[in-house]
View (tube, rainbow, N blue to C red):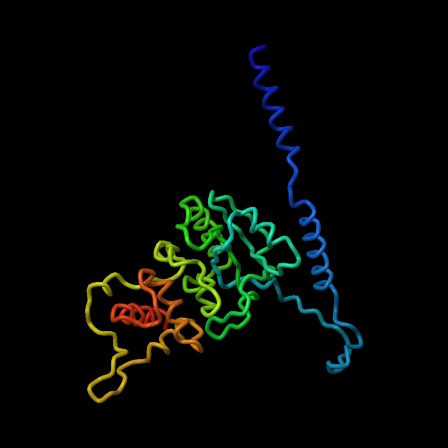
Length: 286
């Protein structure tokens, strides 16, 4: 029995030490709770009676019993373009930066959940996908600790896949709605970089990918003009728009598409292979 005492003593000391470790974000966590409580008070309040001048008069407030919280329907993946997870956590806990995300995943796979999935993070900025111009209001933002020029760590990708599986199951997010920051803001952003393994994610149901046959089938995509100069199908710009890209700056949208689906190529021109890939994906997004 005496031989067990050192073990239990060491265990007790270890537990005590763990309990004494101070969370470096205690102060900002307190601010988080205060802000959530303020939002809760807004939700609990009824419209003023009588209503404000800009609203028509109403005899009384009628609270419906059929409602719930809004849920995210998109996942936007970023790279931090910073040097460490610690730097990013600090950036997202400073008021002056005015940027945030729901999740930050380190190179070592450690995952920090920074905001309730039901709340609106400030991660998308000025962006557009299809007809959606307020991406922040319908999405979850995930930041990967990566400076934008390095491969993504395996431990990090393993954790990312777990988070994506949780989000897809929890909120029934369609496969088409897992996209990158560079997809929704092609003029301003290029994250996650061309080194990000979108095909691996698509194989797990997080995003779409083109059929492998496209690589060997040399049949020209129906974007090409026929002998009379008429288009046999939609233009490449229209195909990009159907997928979701903002084509007001077509070269930027084309580069964003290639960074996501043809990362080995650069430039704003579509090769014949690019056109076949675009056509194949356009058909999937219809």
